[in-house]
Structure formats: C-alpha cells, structure tokens
Image (cartoon, rainbow, N blue to C red; front, side, top):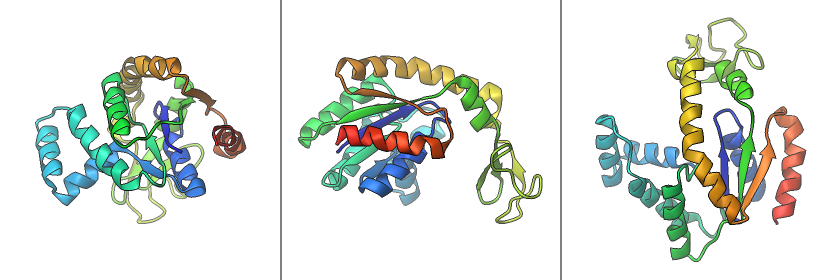
Length: 215
C-alpha cells in the first residue's frame, strides 16, 4: 500500500504517518527529512541543495523529486507513506512519473482537515527548548517548571516562526499551493478527507477504520 498524507500545520499528519508506519510496516517518507539528511551527509545532492538554500532560494522540484525517487526505489517493496509530499501540482506530476517508472501506484491520498483555529491552538501554543529541541505545548503538555526544559534544563521559548502572524502566513501559502493539488487527487478519485480536529486518542480508532477500508 502506498499513501500520501496532506494537511496544514498542526493537523497531525506526521504523527499519523509514524503511527501507520509502526502498525503496517510502511516506510514514512518526508521530503524535508530527506533533504536535511543529504545536506548533513554532504552528498553531491546535499551540497547542491545547501548552496541553493544558503542563497535564500527554494530547492527545485526536480531535485526534491530525485531524492524521493531514490528513497522509493529503496523501500518500494514495503509500501510508503509520503508525508507532506507532493505540495504542489508540479511535484504531483513529477511523482506520477516516478511511480510509473517503478510500476507503482498511490492507493489513497488522505487529507487531514482542521480549522485555522485548531492550528493556532496547537502550533501557537508550541514551546521549544533552545538547547535540545524538545517540544512542549502551553496547554496540553507544558514543562514542569515554566520556561525550563524537563530533559536538559535549557530555556523553553516560542519560536519566531510559531507566532500567530508567521503561522497565518504559512497557512496562506499552504492553501494557495495545495488547493489545485486537492482538486487534482479528487478528480482521480483518490482523495479521502479525514477530520483531524479531535484529540489523538479519539482519532486513532476512526483512522484505523479508514485504513481497513483501503486494504
């Protein structure tokens, strides 16, 4: 089984990708993680990507597609979850070619739907340790001591890109990019909308039902 998970920030798509990966043995593929791994390993592709990012430009779709194809080639026998990829229509078309090259198909595209209010609550309440990177939430998972990390004692802060203004800007960009993508997969009959607003424990049984339908 090969799945695509879409959803705006705070929708829980990454959490569910990990959940399904553990339950079904599917390999989670995040384009961002692949890119960071290549940069860290200083591969030719990684060096090229780093150069582009350092210049303040977006990494070309073709380069990201190359990384995704490399990973799919390695993991295709297990089935994959594409977590947050593709993000644009161009990327979706490149993915079609990749899958066709490997005689694979996408079984479903799951769109995790939440309101902007829920995103602001989940992400706007997010706190990050400046030392170890551990993530907390002001409401649902605050540090034991205000402003101090439970794990390493580092300072816990709201990141600049987690302010309401920054989140709103990212949501606007996301919608602009993703609307054509959602229509594209809807026309193909692959799109499944999943209400991701309730708490995680409430969502898991519903998500298990959806997975059963797809099997």
